[in-house]
Structure formats: C-alpha cells, structure tokens
Length: 116
Image (cartoon, rainbow, N blue to C red):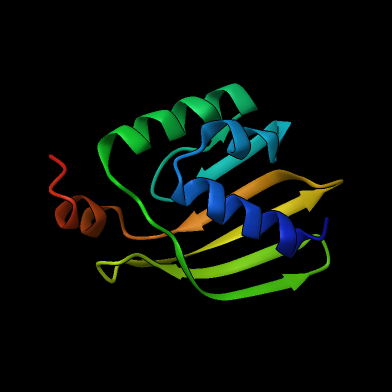
C-alpha cells in the first residue's frame, strides 16, 4: 500500500474508533507525537492513548487535503465542529513508523467540554 492508502485506512478506522484496525497500521516501535502532548512510543502505548482519547470525546477526522511525498502521507483535517489540525505520517513497508499531529489542545478541551 502507498502511504496515502495507509492514511485513508487510518482515517476510516479512527472515525469508527476501531482500535483493532488502527493497531494493524502501526509498526511495533512506532512513535505518535501529538505536539500538544509528550511523544507516545510503541504500539502498546499508542493503543492505550487511543483507548483513553476515544473514551473522552467522540472524535471525527474529516480530511480537507491529503498529500503524499515519498514515505510521507500528510493530511489537513477538521472535525464536524470546525476544529482543525494537520498530521504527518511516515510509512515504511505499509506501517506507520512515525505520526506527528499539530492542533490546539486548549481549543479542543473547550470545544468538547473536557476539564482542564
């Protein structure tokens, strides 16, 4: 699969809160660094992160733009409430090895009424 195809599968799994499919897309030693938070290292820790996030808010990723450049899939996204951000996914051999996301944590917490 191309990086763009992996990202498209990731979006579908994310929007369905489908942890099993999401985890199939990550390399064992993947790093997920949402820059508003500390990096999360390893597939097991990434799974725990998603479990907690899906429990806190109903998140929906609506891609605005998707690009591919070599091993990278890049996405600008928004959610149904208009919250926006972007993500960078480094894909090697069909697996996400590095994910980096940029979004405003304070705005997210306020929008979804999550205590600070």
